[in-house]
Length: 176
Length: 454
Image: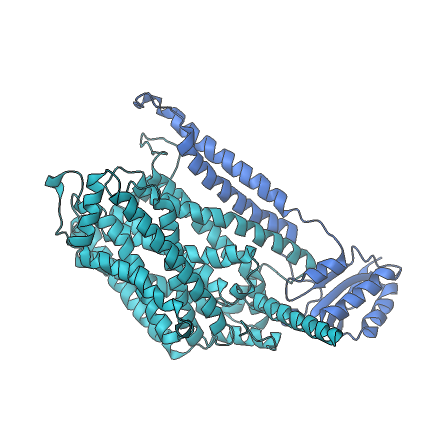
């Protein structure tokens, strides 16, 4: 069955939290609170994460991978180039000297870490993204939005919950 | 005194900051005009130098690094306070950084771009710039991976690219605000493109927080390494006056110092030009001033350590260079450096001057003059008075072309910086909202606790 979107706007975090709590406790046919609900806020707010429950973040794994790869790539790039220096007179000094190579390895470690962290961020945050089916520019100002996706039968129940908690505005996707 | 008023409506924050993109005070255009003139003069100097040859810089043996390398270090140093404000203070949860870190980050980016120009200008043969990059050896060019000069190129590239990404990532939520606020036109298209479809969802914020924190953690050791490597350009050589163990921390302290002084200057300019009085408040200025004062004292101490280690060492040549600095041709500039860098900041110790804007503006300019002189006094005197007396040259004076390019770098930096502030929000709207929100919550908690006590 096709699902429709519904967006409710609230003026503060307490009201939005109350709605989310009610949606979590209620059993609504055709609506899954874990998969079908998105909370949008104008600021990064730990309270939002608290009432939505723990959700994993994987960016740090990208960071680890990027930093290690960056460091290894840096070291082998330099050492590989130095290994070709055999025809140069090194005066008994090592062909691949570790202490000075550490500096460039360190820089490449950071460079790889930063670049791949950004890549991880884009992947994990789903960016670049298309505009949601329902969007209000008021979220950029001071409103907190709750966007839900539900089957036709659940729409009226959800709307009733939003209205009960004094939503400032409710937007509804046109029926298909 | 409050860092920021807690009763500012979030909508007003958007309006005020977005207004700065469209309607600055007239002084903005005056600054832009002079910056353009200075930059144009520098372009003329560079064309003349390029066509005539490096001789017009008036550097010749023993003076091989003239004003260009001194100014290169100055601009690298300037970049460090963006990291201090945005990364270090972010990790320390210093809320007061929020209205001002964006322009400090932009300052980091543009000062690094300005510094990079000097490397190219200095080598003369612009098309051979890639010689300084670490690339695998072929064509028998033999890049020397053991040279701090090559480390420098890599460190600056890493720092510049990471700073640009840090600035961009931190700006995404604000770009989304700009996208939603702007009327149709090129700006809206630009913000729509750069905002990447940000909508402030919980998933986006969660990942954003971790990413921002992670990059901040990377940037701090990176910033320290960049200026330590710049210090190694000098300290790893055998030249008298440079072969000093304390050079890396001395350079890092100097970098933070000049960066903080520049932040004070730009804070005052932006506050007036973009009407940011409600966000770039005097209590925040006071905090930066105190921070600058502390760093000034660290720099003064490290200077004293450097002089003492040379003075009491058995390295007579290095000692001779130090005496030359104090009493020779460069003495006025060296004493000028000591005065501007160690005496002038004492003004910051007086409470009444800590929020006096005209005084702070003048002092911040003097501090930066002192910091520029510091870099010149590192480079020039050592070359003029090396190991061999027959190479001494105390009379070398930079040419008009060299001064022109130094002057132009300030124009170039100002141009980039002011254009950035006009095109992108120079105050972080979402973070100021967070700051206001935290203050409101704190007040509510205090009131509740007070009522409970009664």
